[in-house]
Figure 1: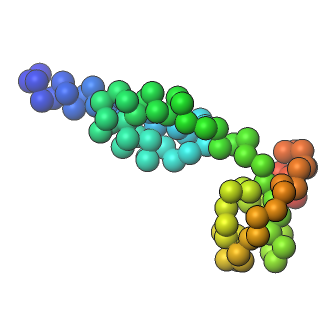
Figure 2 (figure 1 turned 30 degrees about the horizontal axis):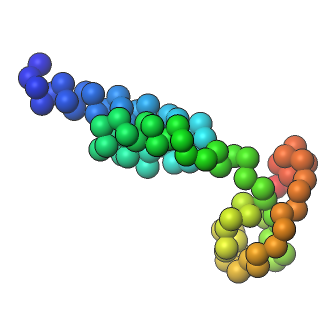
Length: 99
């Protein structure tokens, strides 16, 4: 293999590692794959340091009742503007069953 092919293979696997870590933390695999492949190793470090999105508190939309992350400003189902309020703290099991 030539030098260019080796570089592409290394970038692919660095992107793959960043993508898998990002997906485990609840983010987009494709986004982290691209970041990891283009930054030559820094993307994997950034994915490791990135916050875990699965543990984010949730609240219920007053219009449609969908559970959404508290950081969302608009409901992804009905488009309702959500006011900044305290989280409806329910156990994840109960929140998952209500969806």
